[in-house]
Image 1 (cartoon, helix red, strand yellow):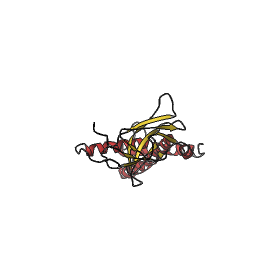
Image 2 (cartoon, one colour):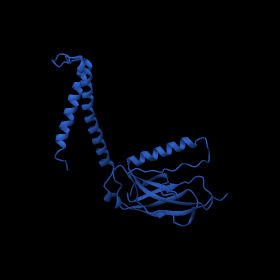
Image 3 (tube, helix red, strand yellow):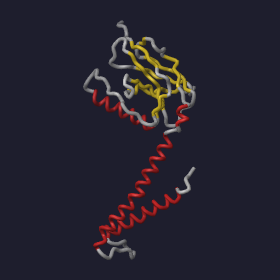
Image 4 (cartoon, helix red, strand yellow):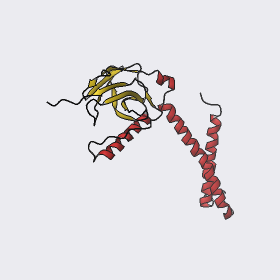
Length: 222
């Protein structure tokens, strides 16, 4: 629903834009060509310029606010829609020992919201630490089924892991991409180095599955 005052706000900020632009132009040029709009006294040039800039700040602020509001409403569904989205695991079996690569698969109860993806994320012992692993792909011929392969690095036999599926929007996807680029850059000349965790998350990253925990097994030598 559009607020009743939205039309007045639009009119006001447009008026500020045109009046501010006119005042700045008058101050810079001393007058507008082929018109009677002129600044007769040079002492008024600086005040005219400052008032014009002040008026231009208003439409700039409104434009940014409108853009942020539009982006938020476009990329983040409401909370009930997200809390009703559920992911279940078919494999691997929890609380057992598995040799990488480990196939994860399962089901979802609703189609993915527009702009969102499923991500398999490793959760550390500290609640705020997370290591995004890979995107879980939806089966092309059945939107209810998903799968992803988990390839852990730098682990010892019997190490434990706890993972979860997250629903990730556009802001979260950008954060994950930045997380991966930064870690690749800082570890490219340090084989075997551990990646730093992602300690923050965006508002469009939601855990939508229970956690699944298991032990890792080293592959047996041939």
